[in-house]
Amino acid sequence: MERSRGGPRFESGRRGAERLSDVEVQENLEELDKLLARLVEKSGDLDPEVKEAIRAKIQGILATLGLQSLDDIRGLMALHERVHQGVRNLPMPVGYPDKSDFEQRVLELIQATRPESLPGVPKNPLATDVASHGQNDWHALEGRGGKEITEYIYELGKVLSSELAYTVTFDEKDAIEIGEDWSVENGRHRAMTLRILGTDYVEEQNLDRWVKVRKEE
Image (cartoon, rainbow, N blue to C red; front, side):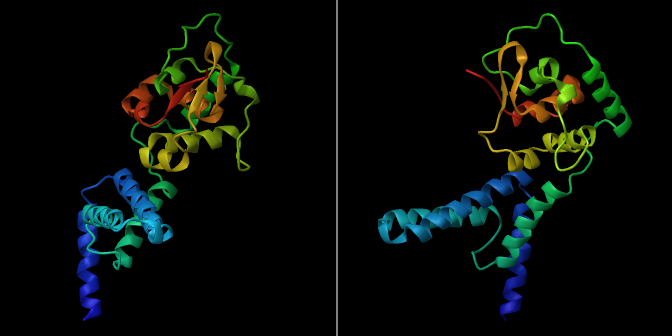
């Protein structure tokens, strides 16, 4: 009997989550974790009405995810696996440059001389602006994790192209920071990747929506 009840709950969870994007699933799971932590850690100090409100929110999230209860461990695990797989196994984005083209663009950027004049940095710069004007000593930038710079930012570009992967990898506070004359003060690898991908690609992929840029005060 227990097995037969568990199966349908798992299937129901999958059907409910299919209506959501990976980012929406991720956001719901994170909110669920926060509510559960608050309920467990502060249970003795919470007013009964507050507890009931938290439980109602938890049930609402479970319903959104297509799960009947927290007992559906298999369903929850499947959803966690889904969003984590989305980060680990990134598909090749539509329109993403091939490796040889990417390498050529890196070489051109490194060899290019800094322009004598640039437009002023707007109050709220966008990823497309960084793709056009971001400045740094690109030739001095090194890759990470033992990877050569071109290989590193080629994979980083796939992360930037995925809203789920980007928001999981980079905290909202970890924005690309732009100083005077478009100098990149934080997020140099991301800025270089945007320069390589170019404004057309950044606009087509709508990266402005999740790749946050901040003007340094």
